[in-house]
Image 1 (cartoon, rainbow, N blue to C red):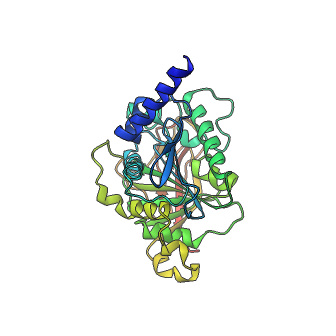
Image 2: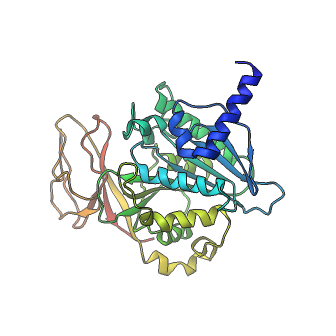
Image 3: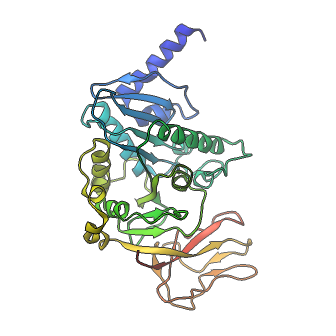
Length: 355
């Protein structure tokens, strides 16, 4: 391809982004695209870093905020509501309906699985971050490596508050329909302002992680010192079956962050956040259930919801050499899934706590 052909291709891709939208161009090029030239809009610039990775920056002469924001979606390809949220935000930016004041990176994480309508193709991508992709050559491992590099490069450009909200939806229903997983803080304090922001964004429960993990949000937290969350926004549904109003609180708050509008949950002192903190139930992980053998079985129905509590003594799993018995009244299970390989996590046992 000569230089003229490259310019035409780049111009066509940028035009496609402006005319058809972020999701459409991501769907059409799931295998990747080269770094594109910047698109200059009235109040910001756009740049396609790769398929499903869109950099949004205020113009240098503008008064800008001091937050660098990553909003990711589609790490699991069938979790469509977050993808639609990111696509709507991108569309509003392109239309000039959002005045961009904070640098933002919008991500649709797993375009191949998204086009297949599957959670993943080769391997669960949210088990491939924090270096777990090393030594693997399938596309999801390579994509996880690419996303790590892009987020690290994005944050490295300046000194600013780093935020990463990785948006998901859950396989099962939940007694707390919208909840967020707060990655293990590695010695840092749980940030009450961030929890208050989640409450203000319609999140019902916070799950405090108990150890390092291979998730995208933990990578940003541990390696890049971002305030990061995995945010579960309800149940998995196909494209077109999600109701925008169900996610309005979160989407509106994300837009406020991008445009540097006042967000009291984040901007006011933590000691003024108690009314918001009272709105969320807080849980901590007490045990990780690992599938030890092919004889593993969950003693709950396929319809059982996340955060369902159980009585002390209930045999929640069967396995070899032994399963797990609930140790405290009211302990609950989150993310139960026995359709996994031996050695992987089949669920989390959680209990209520406070911070």
